[in-house]
Length: 174
Image 1 (spheres, rainbow, N blue to C red):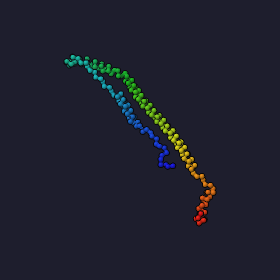
Image 2: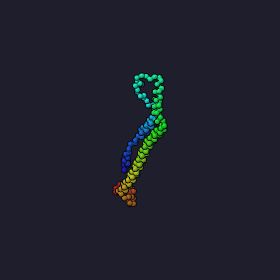
Image 3: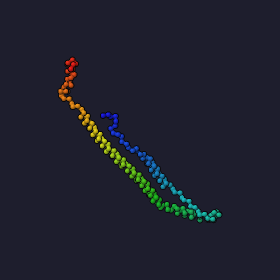
Image 4: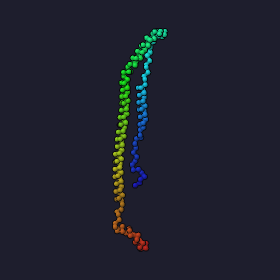
């Protein structure tokens, strides 16, 4: 029996997937979300309604404070809806991020369980092949013992031992 060849053919497996790329992409996404949440919002520009009086002549000094008051009120109205729900927006964002993280975790857990099941299937396959190999070796050993000639009898053993002595005693002739 030659030992040049491997007893088991190599098992083909799927190449390892690079998960660090996805981890970096997820981290970049989280950083981008946190950055957009923490960045101060730019105040929307409130345009004055264009009237013929505004275009035709510059407003006198007394009219300027009257115009500034509606602008301030408009800015306050725009900012007012954001302030009470800041925590709600943050909680909603965190929930969305948690859902994404949960989905990623579930996907990775599923992949891990699939890999474990595949490894268990490979172990069973290896055990089955080892049993078959043992049975094949036993058959080969049985065939080799069946092909061997029977052991020599006692008389034959004695003659084989004394044959060199008898040859030399007769002067080398039979």
